[in-house]
Image (cartoon, rainbow, N blue to C red; front, side):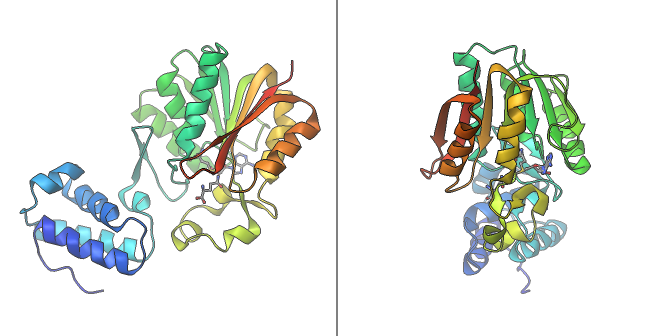
Length: 290
Ligand code: SAM
Ligand code: GLN
């Protein structure tokens, strides 16, 4: 790789942005800014107020390494080891999915249901918590609720626990390692999940930065993509209190199949979808019949 010459922040960002754009990185300017501010230990706005600053040799070397990793396809969040979700800082590594902005819609939807149905003291079970993003975001808003967040990956559970601690909600969330509902015997007011929902066919078409860097077990569901939703719908009915809510994130084009499977059980009412910023049905909610 051509070495980045020593330059001031303004020119350095310009050069990095151009390199990123050449290999079709979706947000070249943003990625350059996030990386440079990370290695300079400054926030992004300071890059503009200090645009004449020339980084030291050490800063340049570290930034150069980060840029090289990004050029090989690694997502920025794995390079910096952090990601913002619901305005909270989360620690991230390659054992967990990088929380996606559209998953905040699931958080919003649960908050709306809590308010509308007065479930402020509710017991909330999250299946497949990964970095802990969803439960930690909700716990930061609902200090009287009680959270149980689980994942099959012990590495994910460890990171999620640290993230709860760093965001001051460790007393509200219990983390458990296991397979789906297996660790639980009691019933909940909410079962929430952003499960793996990529089909085997879709998996091969995922962008390199997702397919080659994010954990396969966080993404790949099975031949159809809705295998986890089926488990959550079927078994979830036994773990929900009457009038409790199942809230799940779904993938592009999965709403019809998910609606059908919910109706087939005859155990859910009030099935509704929420669309994301791109107009895709992204979150489904359903109430356990009374
Ligand atoms: N909740 C996080 C988020 O929204 O950013 C992570 C979601 S990721 C799409 C799905 C998660 O489900 C992964 O962390 C994965 O390890 C976990 N998972 C996969 N199979 C599981 C299973 N059988 N039981 C529990 N968790 C599972
Ligand atoms: N939204 C993720 C993607 O961009 C998929 C997450 C999931 O499978 N739950 O690929």
